View 1 (tube, one colour):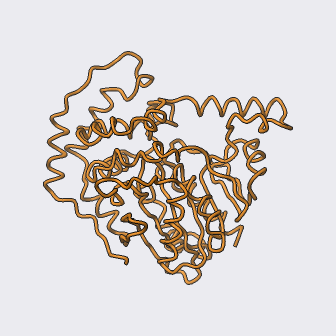
View 2 (cartoon, helix red, strand yellow):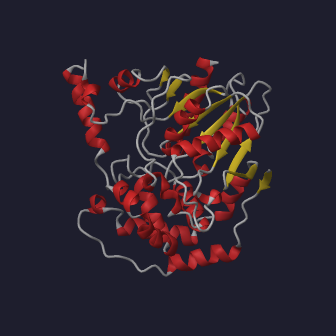
View 3 (cartoon, one colour):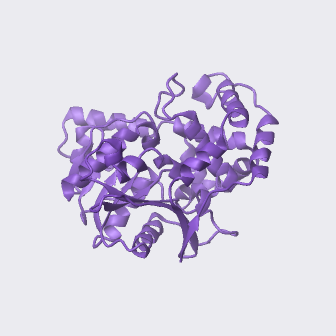
Length: 375
């Protein structure tokens, strides 16, 4: 039922990628810089590095340094990393990545979580890490034709519960970012007999427009919520189109690695001031992620979190304790406490949507603090 897996992309596929990158038909530059999207000059430089400087085999080896497997659950092949800790009292922990990302999101956090002693951390808090690729992402690619049943957050959570059962874990924690932050509390609500705690990077307490959220808040808190709401509605507006017409975008993702790269770069840089000189995520990680999408042809299928109506905010649940690593203003915690038992609210900030890539130390610290608190 569980099969060992190793990434081994055919050299012909890498050669074709480089050829496509070199033959890109470039768009002209519109006025407005980053406010109109990813600038041509920026993307050309990054694509040139992808074609002639980036070492896919080195990144493939980084991923292959972790034990990987596949298993079939509910008609879907699920790919996952499974890294056991040398510490005898380690807690099993399932990590769920974000959109548009992959298990490469966790490359820099798995080591400190599984082997804290080897990273100068207290070995009394250690984890057996399970990091699955979300259905439709990379090596958990959908079958052809795609399953007509919706891949809702509920269905993913049930799949994760079955995965952990299949691995023999009776008691485990859960952590997630973005799409993973939707799966994680839903998993806790569905499997509270086994999940000991639900930890996410953010999203709880965010305004939804419900007037009840404003009850009992002072003017300062109301102003803070208005700022958060304005930030949430800014950006490129990609969500509604992905929800309505994902197939149309999928052609560009499948035919042009630069189209795929531009779309991912825009998401990766969304939090950093739109094109500031400081890169929130090192470019080798950006290109590892882009390579996983391109080489597996999953740019279109990964958008199911939008077209299946799964994109949104994390659900409230009181089945198990809740933690938030990058929680934001205190007013968000007060709102979140109305529907969750908050055991930990971290005050870390992140320069990127891809928190574990941009600020892995903060994710490690948050995970260790939360699960130490509730154990």
